[in-house]
Amino acid sequence: MCLLVFSYKQHPIYDFVFATNRDEFYDRPTRPAKFWSDHPNILAGKDLQAGGTWLGITKNGKFSALTNYRDPSIQKEDPPSRGHLVLDYLKEGKTIDQYLKDVDKKANQYNGFNLLSGNLSDGETGLMYYSNQQNEIRRLEAGLYGLSNKLLDTPWPKVTRAKKALDTLIRSGEVSEEKLFDLLQDDTQASEEELPDTGIPHELEKAVSPIFIKTDRYGTRNSTVILVEKSGKVIFEERRYQNGSMEVENTNRYEFFIEHG
Image (tube, rainbow, N blue to C red; front, side, top):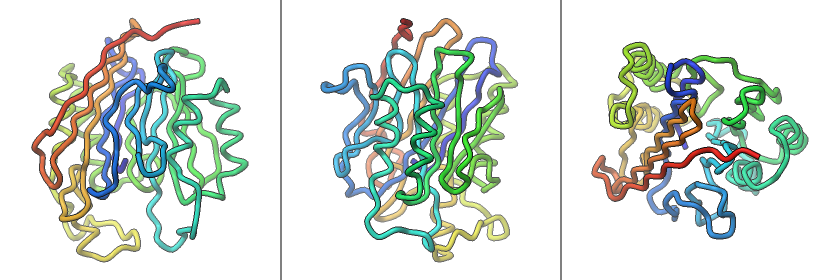
């Protein structure tokens, strides 16, 4: 996943408004989001190459999402899959505090990552953010946040653009699934003066600068919107695209109430 933007406890109806694009090589096999047969509590897509996931939520409100940290100079030769960091939290019975402390102990084994995790049914637990580039567990306050392949709220053009669009929706009271998917389909490239320098070739830097990416071999594979109402109702919708296109190939939509106890 390469871009996510979310509002936490800022809306009169939705405690959590979350929108994300997953960018990946087109030839990397993945399974659409669904409740897993071997872990029926977990709703997530699946990376069929490494077995983990980039985003998931459980019936009792546990949530986790991951982005890679882009810096070619610090790539490891044979690291473990980062997607299992999401999956393990969703599977295990640990609190988010304990889980992230355990992650911190082994974080240097992995390539760079950002991990957003928490329990959306528990106002005290809430959401936490961790990156192995900072090695600091941070509890998030109510607010609006954006994350791509650097640290949380790093002002890359796509992050700034997505946050501004979401803030407009929140302030206008016009939050809806369709408007969030519209936000995620913005393919405007950053201007030359706005481009970050992340250690990749200039032309590639420009090609991956939009919210929605389309290149020959790599791009936005799917968009996901999650809305969690104060009542505990969860709306989860994933739209998967044809390679290099905004043409929707299939849609997977789920609604459920968070289970307590």
